[in-house]
Image (cartoon, rainbow, N blue to C red; front, side, top):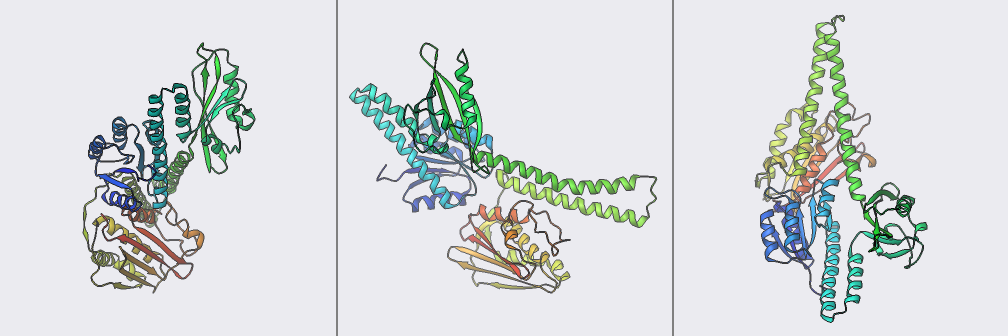
Length: 493
């Protein structure tokens, strides 16, 4: 494979992403076949021995893990990646156990994606070399050299780190991945290794070596190698017996679980944020109702009505929050049905301006429009693009000043339609801008006090844009205003 680019299969039910990946890989010289569902992907893999297979986790007909299983059954040496926008520790572990070489969370940049593919090609090359070495050794009947070479090739080619330690604590075998994970600069066979290992691993090895009877049991521990969860590993220690059953040593497998740990932390933080966002309005509603139900309190009719109105407002905000959360969840698991059609962006923008006309008139905001003549249509879901424009324009109104101005333009920039929404509103500070698309984030200062919202609108906007392989940028200056630039591919579908 030195002079020949890899043959790659892409299995993804999202057409825009599938075509985008195909073009990206073909530009790099790879030969690419695509499948729009799991069944077609399995059929192609049964007829062709691909070097690399890139499989979407969530598909309407067959789950990505089942596709992975079938491909590895048909062509065990195909290097497989699982891609998903619904990343979790459990699915990552399961896909690895089924033979996946890598796990690529969506959305990803072209640079991140190509780097993963390059690592897969290197892995494929090592596998091909191992197979070739096996064939050569079998033909020459050099069984001893063959066994040693095969072991070296297999262990050195895997991405996990491997140490084999004898009863005296001396290293009998290792690969370079192990040295990299533990930041060990130099090591030779026969060196004492315990002093160079983290104390958590040393303690497990000590327990194994002290046991009178060998138990073929694996002991695991998770260790933070670099601070702030920059590098977290899982070490699995297993006793190695002699043929007579006595203890020969310990094998240690070191896996990089940094990404899985981050996913778990993100999930935990997200749940905490949801609970916090719901707790405050629920407590307020409960307080109002308790007052109204207390017969000992003689509350005026006007005050009762005020309490009820406040409760209704908080309930409406919670319903909006729940609906936004459901939308985000559907986007991640791809259960939200899309109806792709040709979209006239000018009509969508005009309809949105009319929808929000009452809000803009209350603040006496002037809205100016500048549309390029003959603006091409894009292929997209009407509801999603309407939601995108509505969220951006609604924010431009809410965070604008009285008697302010909003400028909306749309024009063609290379292969994209660029939508520009500029306001003369509050604007943002640099630290606020960096957190803008985070879930539940809302800028808090004297000027934003009293402006309602769920903090999920721009998160949804970002996910919609990403789902069409588009780009969104923000320019803002505190006290001057904010400009959103949305680039949607003309052939987005």
